[in-house]
Image (cartoon, rainbow, N blue to C red; front, side, top):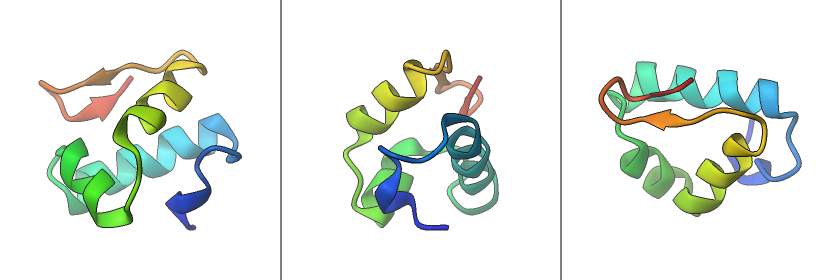
Length: 63
């Protein structure tokens, strides 16, 4: 799955994919994830927020 098309991805699938990547590959560091995939971090946050998810830095996940 390619995160580059996150703007058109199903938000539930995106939520699951991003949280899995954060947990398994980036130790909860959203900045690293965004940098690695060349994503606009704020656009990703906004996309998931539009589906009701908020990034919680203290746990390194969207919930």
